[in-house]
Length: 304
Image (cartoon, rainbow, N blue to C red; front, top):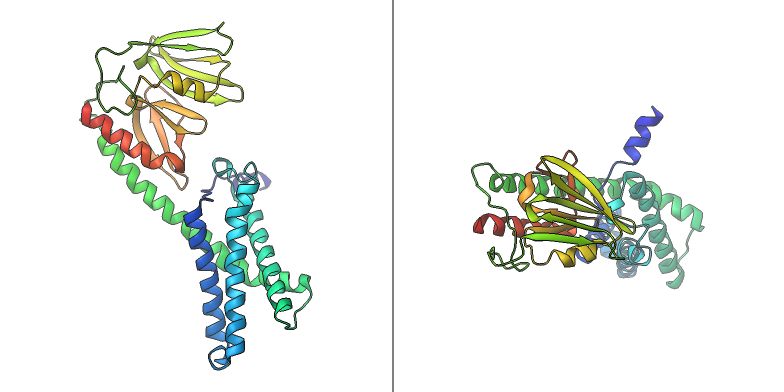
């Protein structure tokens, strides 16, 4: 039982703390509060101009509090609000934080306007009990919407990755050029920071590169078997070395892949999960790279 709970709490969730979604989230939150108060306010907000003004101030404060909690706070605490590491338990802790700021906003508005207000503990308890359900519902609906969108897009990509679409691997050419240059380099030389360790391989052998702390793990095909070589380097350094090879694409903060090795795409709320030829594990494509990945795959098929 405890193991199931732990697995659920550590289940990945889509975390998108960029500006546009959080602006919409703040507007939705304020709209829900405004709608509830107008619906159950017995008409006093329509008849009483002072009460209406107070309601609008409270609504504006709530929208600002939601925006501060879901956009500004993640900017101040980027390690804690890492989108790639966002899980159910982090989201479960984030919701009370949002409602805490909403309570603080309500108290401040009531105080500045000279209205009576309860103790902060009582205010927070009421906001928590009332707000937890619409906040959770909004999160679940947003998660499902992203999941459906990514599943549909992944299915569309799979039609381009079908065996009927014969793919000739890129081996050279300037990054983003969209054409394979026959005069470009035929081999890849990956070197560690100190220059002591080197890995020489053909472009079509390289499957993907993973960032692991101060090192990169290079996964490459050797006689039909994927091997792993660890070099002391950064993924940014490797990406720079691979600029002459347009088949290689940074799909995640920690991963760089060979697009010609992609055989299948699965969608989830966070983005995609890629299956590569001869690779037993799936590789993630994070939200920030989705549009560029779609474009890269399309361009790859057009010139193949």
